[in-house]
Length: 583
Ligand code: F6R
Image 1: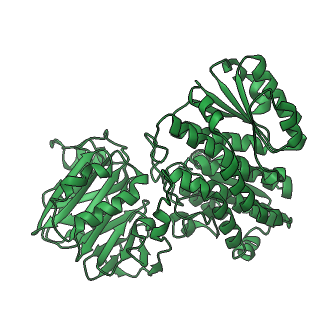
Image 2: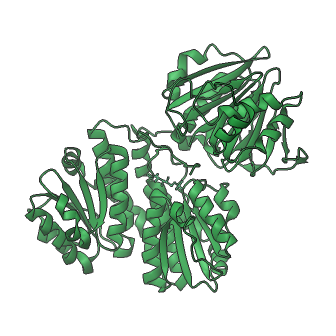
């Protein structure tokens, strides 16, 4: 959610920052900008549109210190004016986050001043310039103390060959390169550039110059932040011959599950210890991560017979939840930085719950709150729509549920091969054609199939913009059936032999109302019964409990192919961004 990047060193800053922004574009892509110090002066190029739109113009920026921003608009429409960096007097800055009290601050300190932009960020640079009395770091610290909300800021000051950084509830890492030092919103932006990084904590300030990095607390006393290995490698950012990251990442589902299973053994002991005495489990997250929680709830209840709930983090944290010392809260997040999920984890911890983070980001905010971190080893996920992180989460949650009750989990070792087979051999193109011309697509299923149906629907709507819902197959006749007609498609997921006949009822109900129906199944009897009557998309057979790993890949492919037919960019859907660090 907005990407920031900065460099100060011996090479060309504009090009370095530009390349960094391209890597961070999944955090927002409605406008972009770069500022570079040249001869003591700061020059800015910024524009509405994608980072590549800056191309030619940034070649005119010459210097060795620069900052950049790729925006996901919150306050103020995407426009050249609202694009970052913002400047006032001798200062120029980029901001990731939201300043909730920007209107009060403006009223208090600049009551009669017309601001240039409609952003909540301009107030910050105006205040820094106002409070500057010769010490730029002190001015940044003073202004940070006034801000409410979330911010990662990279600030440049004319005449100072370096960058001042401050962080509160938005992520920021400093990177140590051979040709200078870096700041970025996350580690993948620094892949191949920095072997070592330091993660800023809330309230930290940092001053980065070509030769050194110093950290300070809000009181301006120097503090230490450890150097950690940057696990992100630049090869992971390669498209590997795929036209889009989404396809590449769907193809990496199997590897994500395999690596997650392998990594799980290292946390078993701590996880088991953390779960002693737990008599209730809440799984929380947002979007796709919440959808993996729908699966986890079913695993935990049916395997371990422990009451489990899946809660949307943004709802859970504001509903005065009943959470106590016998509760384990499993916070699921690909990025580990989603504001609502981090907030839900913090709240749960303050209420005495054990907090378990299931995340793909080892240095994220969520990992710093959690009692135990269960790693998802999906590798960097660049496409805004989550794919391999979802299957990685399912694997981690399956293993967690098995661990709780000592259940044999060895079947999951055979899943990577079956996932690969699903991705390589599932012929989803004709169904994608049907969906592309539909006026609404309903994903239906029961139990675990319903949980995957919700995710299938999210994937389709977010990258194709087709109206879609995920619905329990049994609920169809209680309302949604009213929407079914010739222009609608129902995709029914059937992977549980015991429930197959019940879900087939939904197929019949849609057919009787002249709706179009297709079935994704690995139940042989079901495929036999329906073949010739409706399109049947077979996926490999495995137990019902692990079938979500296969049906998930199938619905991801369906969304991808439909987006391609409709000429949508699946990697950068409209209005969205990855890593939602604002509420
Ligand atoms: C959907 C998608 C989002 C994220 C959600 C949570 O494809 O990617 O719904 O799942 O924003 O993000 P994380 O997992 O980073 O907390």
